[in-house]
Figure 1 (cartoon, one colour):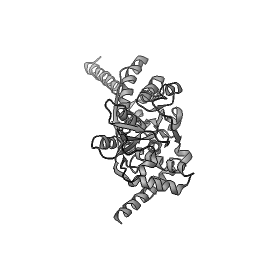
Figure 2 (cartoon, rainbow, N blue to C red; figure 1 turned 120 degrees about the horizontal axis):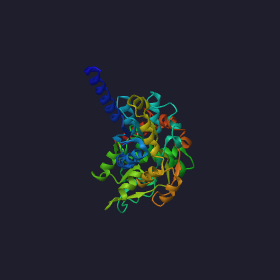
Figure 3 (cartoon, one colour; figure 1 turned 60 degrees about the vertical axis):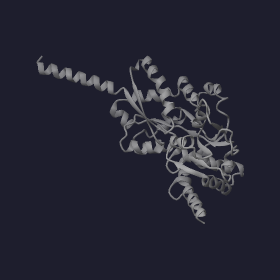
Figure 4 (tube, rainbow, N blue to C red; figure 1 turned 90 degrees about the horizontal axis):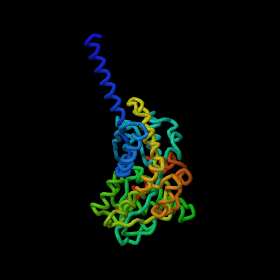
Length: 337
């Protein structure tokens, strides 16, 4: 065999081995406040995957608002999997053929391995006497939340206000609208993402109330030396956390099997335990039972039942010229007058 051919074969084999190693790395594009959660997941998944014969892997993380992450993937972010906080953001990727058209049926529970609700974080001693959503509408109460025009976290907050108004007023949409308007009028900061909202409330010490996912409020309230308390509202909106393999990326990188294994791990008892430990509500009944004392029961309404699904809710509340825009314009006009 000629020397040049031998050298070429060696170079090919080295290149193939290097490519194989590169394929054992995936990127998880996730929502803003999930950094600690998936760092915890990755610590368990990596050795479990190796023990199953999958070899050494690296899982990288990318975090921003869920909707921003979806747009980033459309613009070139090479994520192998997405773990978002809103169905619409995964559907956007499906519309552009980045994920499978039937992505919601690829994994159990409509591809949502865990769920949460929105809750209320107050300062120690609850100085403003906050007990439910209606208290956020009181004069003198200041609220920090994510901008509902740009983030799923903020959209869940608005729908929770509206759901509370509907429940308290026998389904009267006008009275629910009035409650939502009063709460939005008390918002002092609409932040771009969940973690920024947390920093504004906890570090900059703005606002009497932080409205965000229960997992964030409980983590803050249960931290050593915490200066905060959680108020669990009487009703909240089901927040699903949809996952999907970004097939357009994973196929090119040869990471489809690893990406699927990563998302499958979230459904295992070990994965569900990690989710619950991080204050998310698990799907596994046995795990859920063990954490029942930490995850207070709350009446949960679904976007599909109460608001006609995400497409309708987006059109009614969050699209340009929809209810949120209308209410904010009304609030601004009233402040001028």
